[in-house]
Image (cartoon, rainbow, N blue to C red; front, side):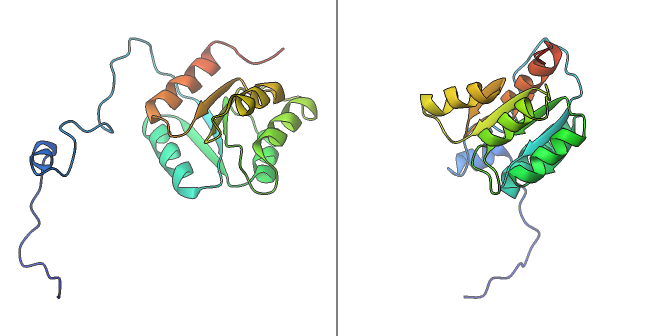
Length: 165
């Protein structure tokens, strides 16, 4: 069966999609909870080996006024974190080259960097979380996550002066 377009595609609203059973009644992605705090611009390094995940988070943060840089492996991520100044680092654990725990440990112990680190990973066991904090993470969030929550956590980490002395 050949697929062809004979007319302009129909524009469907979320309510029409929901009526047809194709979407929830209210899209989760476009709902933004009201928050009374003031948003600040943050310079973030995202160290994530899945390009789609990194791009999704990076696009969201950039659309909200933040500056984002990327690394697809632990070695590159550690290098960028050491030679540049970032307000915060989003760090996955399962990375090629060097895992996120080792990146965080080297960042703290060898490079002496105090940049706040948010570990963002699928590892949800208590042992994994404790290991993350032991290596120097400031926060730990398990995938899947809400983009708005990541943004708020990054802003809190940077505005409350979590940086170690």
